Image (cartoon, rainbow, N blue to C red; front, side, top):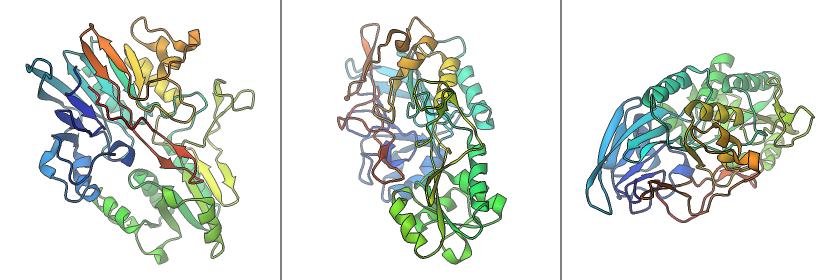
Length: 401
């Protein structure tokens, strides 16, 4: 597929169609209410949330993509002006509300762009996604896999979100006299908060804009903006810090909980944090990061073992990471090259750790077609508000295909 045809999570001028995986800020940089560059394809949930995220946006540009059904798009070749048909399938990414992966099919072959995703293999939603992908790729090769490599390192190993959610409830129950603050983003972790509310039979405070999002997602009775109704509050991640917790404790005993995979580096069987050692996880352990702060390995991104299972399932011809700068960043081929479906060799075996070019890596097929890698630019505030996490790519605009 030639450049100038389709972009995924990149919003610069120069493409004929644009695809959104989900509405987190690191995947929408460049979108604004005045954006008018072409049709924008997204999931039904993302389309529902769009007006609140981008007030004044021209909603006639949105094209709703139903999960699990093939769609087609006719696009002109920039080099020949001849029409080319691209087929695409959206699959639940199980990351945040509205998040999807896109499987593209055309003259270029088959290409899967995961966006951010969590591959909890035994969850019902992942089983449905697995069936969709295997059915779509039956008897064909997946030529390109653009993978969420946020935690593409054996040092990152954490339990299922169900297990982590139980640990958070345990923390809350063990501090009956404390107020509780939980760090969340403007989208995501809704199921965690709903679980806490159901198990403890309490309402949860959220800020007004977040309450609006909760209502759009169908949560009408669980959340409140009245602090007098609950001791559990979900606060913006950017305002969660040691300084914030110390200030709150000067008024009332308060415990902070950071649900994230980022600080959760597993110890290997020798008891240290060497990134290449086989991780050993005790899912019943959470960490007390600070006198007032607990970190819990509740992540909406896939950990290393889940990424490995995903690659092993699909056996792509080639893999590129969508995150070109991340904690313990490694090119996915370093660990997964030996799992690819052709003669792609694991770079780990040969000690070749290729670094992606900041402007995007290019794959060449048959010497004519080229596919240009895009990354997602991300900047998430950590527990200290100084440690940056997630994706950060070159400021150079690039298109996926």
